[in-house]
Amino acid sequence: MSSDRVGYTYFFREPRALDAALSLFSSNEVVSIWCAGVSTGEEAYSYSIMARERNLEATIIASDLEEQALAFARAGRYSDRALRRAGPRIKERWFQHDRESWVVVERARRGVRFLAHDVRQAPLEPPIGGFHIVSCRHLLIYLGKHEVEPVIEKFRSVLAPNGVLVLGLAERLGGSALSRIGFEVVHLEGASVYRRVEPKRIQETKARRIEVPGSQPAPSDGSARASQPITQPSRRSSAPPGQESRPSTAPSKRVQALRLQGDRALDRGDPTLALESYETALREAPLTADLHLRSALCALASGDAGTAKGRLRRALFLDPDCWPAALLLAELFRSTQDMSRYLIQAEQGMRALGGVTSEELAPFVTGQNAAAEWVRRMRKVASTVRS
Picture 1 (spheres, rainbow, N blue to C red):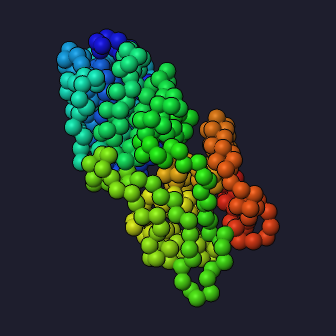
Picture 2: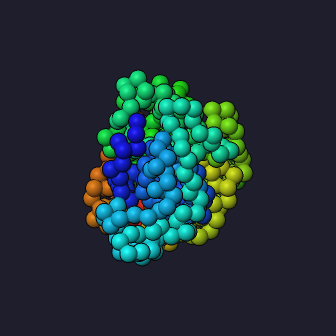
Picture 3: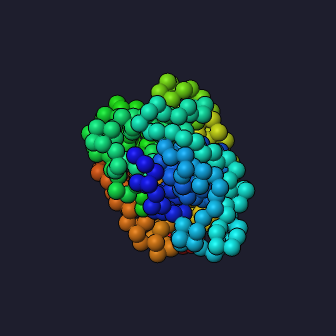
């Protein structure tokens, strides 16, 4: 398995997959990445540059079997051909032109470490909590038939709970391997990544109800209304990979109260006050998809489509069945004539809707109740906002 086999590489190759994985993180977060089979380093530096373009701090371990390829990567000196997908602004910001070469600047090298490693052997020692992203693209196709699944299992063992595996376009995990190893497919930004889940979760097919502001009357005693939380294994767990504990199945009374407080503010037309309540609730329950959905609506009401898209992506990452988030994100893409992404998100939303009962769906599409008004307001804002 020489690095020559994956030596046909260049900067920003198949960038949608990289961008999709990085889109799951918010500005100023620290993202831990393992790039396996990195060859001469273009992909590792691509992750570093794209992360910093998103205001993320990336720590990257880039591994390959061949020391000669790693020495080339550490030098960080590349030809015009390697940068043929890089635009003028990227070249100017992240490279220095030196005669016939382009040299990666120091701030893009920061946090990138190259080391020799064979993916068929024991996996790398992960950081505390595991890697957030493991990227192994265009390498598995060169492994033997019986080598691929053990390598995938090694990748999973070092991923953080809810961490993602990024593969090349020609590399796919079939349904049986997904359920057996413990991954599920997440469709984002025109690309597919594989999220680590507990194997039993793959078998859970019962649709989960997504509660929205105004979908239930406020309790007369002023207490927070009960809700159906969206729970997932923690991506930021401090426990070693594979030893994470299951989160609570219900939000705390304080989170419920903050959610209700935000809903009431949103119904009054005060998205700023509503966002304060939702953000406070998210600090206590960061893996609650419907809170990210609510905060996206606040961003839209304030005219910030970019932030809204990020929050909707996070909601869908935490809960791929969050159909209101998928359909609202589709509306945003449609409003900017991004029809390819619109179709992808609309399809995801319709797939999720397939498991929703007519009773659950009715408040979103008909009637004069608060839930229907909430969705109408979402669609109206989404149709007028331009990124």
